[in-house]
Structures are given as C-alpha cells and as structure tokens.
Image (cartoon, rainbow, N blue to C red; front, top):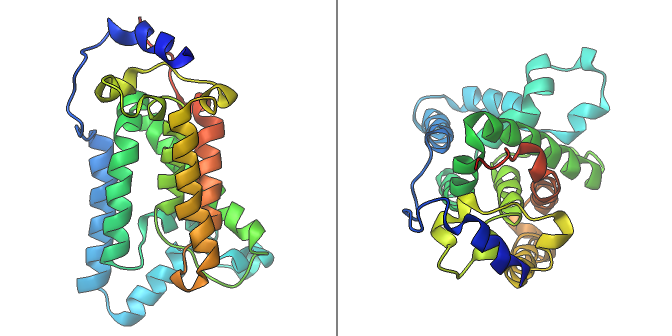
Length: 237
C-alpha cells in the first residue's frame, strides 16, 4: 500500500516512539486563553458586561448585511476570530479543549506556533462565513472553537490519520503529507471522515435542538483538509 511506503520514508529519521500527548506550548496558550475568558465571564463580569462582551466577540452573521458605518468596528472586524475563543459554558469549553488537544497536538508540533496561529485565524474566519452563507446570514450568534477544531481534524487527515492503529502513530507528526485525493484512498481516512460527518453534520442537522453549528464544523473541516499544504513546512532531511 502507498501509505506503507511513506512510512518507510520517515522510519529512520526520527525516534520511533514519542509520548502520545506532548502538548506544544502554543496549544497550551490557546487553551489557557479560552479558560481565562470563560473564568472572567463566569466569576468577574456582571450580566450586562458579559452580554456586551458576547455582542462584541461573537460572530453574528446578520451584522454583515448592514454597512460598516452602522456597526461597531470591534465586533465587525474582530468577531470572525474572537468568537473562536468564547464558549457557551464550561461544558462547551471542556469538550472543545479536549478535542483540540487530540487533533491539534501533532499538527501544532509539526507546523510550529506561527503557522498554527495563522491556521487558527483563517479557519475561524472561513468556518464562520461558511455558516453565514449556508444560513442566509440569519440573526444569530456563533461562539466556540468547534470550527477551528474541525479544521485541525481535516488537516490531520493529510498526514497522521492515515497511520491510525499502526505502530508509527506516535511519530505521526513526521509523516509525509498526502495529497488531497491520495489521503482519501486510505481506509483509515475514509472511516474517520465518515464518522466525523455522521456526528458533526448528520446528527447535528437532524436534531436542531442541540444548537450545534454544523455548517461551521463542515466549513472548518473542508478548510483544514483542502489547504493544509499551505501551512505545512517542508520536511527537513
């Protein structure tokens, strides 16, 4: 199989075994920022102050149906990124942080802090406006890092997901990058994408009472999967 040949190409270049979770500093910083913001909202801000923070920081699709002159510039320009650091509560934050650590640890270690931050910002913007377009710019608000987490999951399909279940998984951060079509030829990627679609899009779309922004999840995943090569540095020999 093609993936077996690719494994051989990095077998001798890096240690065969690494800790499963050796969280990069940049990832720790992002989780700490999200926790700090949630703590501020929960224990420091008044109800009115919290509402104002949400108005400025949340992504509100209908905001972009009106001229900038009628908008708050902070919310207009900052919302498409800031919303990814805000959450609907501690449970929402905990689940997003957990999946972020799972999917983003090998990715952040591979591409470095600067590229990881750029990927975070651009995937947040793309997933937000992907939702806005599919929802016809409805008057609602979006918060949470789910779109970004989905982008990390999509990007992971191009290098580490193909190694799921193998003895090379722990060194997956060094795996050669697969092409867009090439990755979809790997069984582990097909199964992963199918399960991801079921839990993030199909079930969320069927049960609208959960208030899951499946459009943002889908947009983020597509962004991460399709653009990963733009953020992935050349492997050093």
